[in-house]
Length: 598
Image (cartoon, one colour):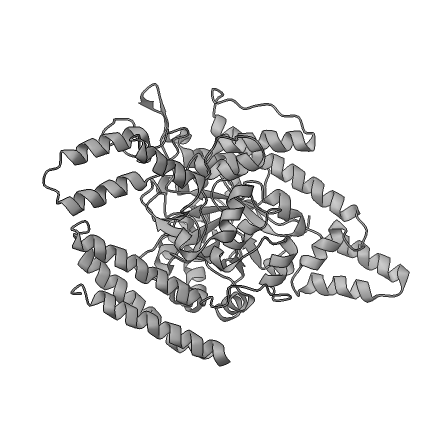
């Protein structure tokens, strides 16, 4: 099947969302040339979904049991191969459909942006010579190609595995097993590494030939790095290049204006980060290629004649076509990521009926940046999700903490030799008892620490709840819903056509009237984060805050000045409103930091 560049199919992708929301999204969108990502954290869910789709498609299913050797990696490989098989079947069937209104092949071409394939399709529609028209249709069928079935591995979730109290070799750790599962699959796609560097995982990737170039320099499996600042991209890119691994896409994500875990960083804003990529992209490409080439030579492999493609993309809080096109055109991006709005498209993502209603009614106050994650990373949460209600009910009953069903976030060894999860009942009861005996703590400090303990919630099991309820796999689960703050700007369920036409500016959706620009929203979220840090500092919970707050303020101040200069790119009332909102943020930042000597 002929390879396509991003410009030839779509210039947006659907990023990974939780463990369950996009677990089978490729089966809904890949046949239309749209790329999406599947989380590889929850192998229990993956096995459940393999059974579900095998039975749905009439494909024989043989269970891979937890007692089977290397079960986690094998479950992942089997599921990814199933997705690949079904999508190839879908593409073959799509190519056979006629070019008539409502057909699958017509939908494929109608969804495309204004690119070469779209123009060829429109030329075919206008052609009156029937012989020539059929030939044009034949060529168009040959051009049809699926979107990529990408996978996501959160590098922090690399739990070591214990058996009978003994730690097994690193080979069986969660992230390494997930990578092995992907590497052994038939897919030709990308793995997205998110949440920072993991040296043993990066080294392990170099052991698989699919991540190394063939004689022509082509890569069967590629690496995408999700980053929130340029320095992180440079450090991790070098680390991978030294192992003979090429980063095919630096996926820049807003630190706070996103869904799921929010890596706030030190006040680095999306615009200033993308500016650094814009001005240093060629320098980064050359530097990494030199390191990469030497590493390949040391492995006895051919040095490529030219660098492989290095893409830069961005995601987090994009809401309009104007924002989308500005990011692509001004920063020379290859594509953008749209996540949160897709939660309101039932044909694409998995959210059960009850929580769809909650998302549609959600106001700003209903979406909170919480301390729910056991990874100790701020986490976007829907306040009235079943998971949050269950957490609060357990506290009221005097039995805080979750039953630790899957344990993917078991990293804490404060009280046990074998790691446990900070959201588990076992940990929280032990931690609360410890807190009672800490007489040195002031009353307000003890209260704040208790709140932090009790906020931790089960994400391993609950993030799969929306899809297992929707598909009648598990009716008793209490789903967690992790959505970005952008959800409040969308007020109804949408179809795939509607959101794609919105992204490409063909038929924009009506959004919230006073929606702020994505750059302003991100800036406001960073200021809110600073407020929390300052409150913690005043309570004595953040002893080293002054230095960090000073750095945070310097970066935000530089970002505000950058956006003032950038405003020349905005025209008419948009520029005036943008500058007015920006000044409000500058004033808020000054008032806030006046409370702390920095």
